[in-house]
Length: 327
Image (cartoon, rainbow, N blue to C red; front, side, top):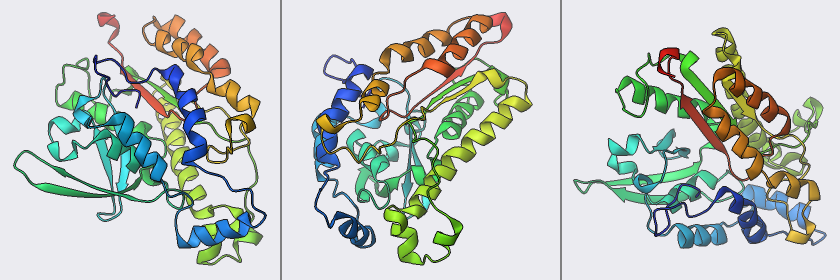
């Protein structure tokens, strides 16, 4: 949504607007029920259907984004989703849409699709039509089931552009990761907690894995492992080529409440509000990209300890660094 244009070809939202959007709309996107039988009802709902119907989310996204399509974004984006009919990821990429018009979908459909986390929000169906008039069907859920941390996906798109000789990037070897500067902002995570035990899970069947422990263990395990493995792989990769300082993963760890568990603005955790106010610190990251290496590394060191990240804005910035003789 931050890259969607308004009528003046400017961003529809500024980064500082994201927390207010969340505060205004979260209670209606994720409505809460305080009835005493809610835990039992949630367990039944987890088996019979999604926890939230998604109607308000669909409505507000279509209202805000209107008829804007993927090719109209103000900057390049890479948005992973998963097509459950084809059983394969579908990547909505600003680069790929130039070669494959069938993915030139409405941004509202893409946002709804990438928000459709299994058991939380319903899957989303839509169609597109390419230039010859061929219709393509999409049966989508959240791409987090395959790429909950989309860093590798974005690096793959950059690599393909470099191989194709894109003028957006310096002429380097496609796998020369010494020229990559990757800044990955996570969506926040709760403090480490022991969620499930082997003794508990040993008794689970299908129902237990879908609703055991008052949560959705199968989804939790899938999403968390997907994200952590990407971070593990990239940390090892950049360390292997002796440029670990070129990879920065920032994911604030301090929240005890989920994004879908906020009954009202008044009930929000004050620490959550503090961490949502991230835009001033995020400027430090943007500035650090253009600095010489020693100064840039100093900025990154500061970012590691002080950056406050917006929870509802999972952003990835991949920069192709010039060679020393091109600085």
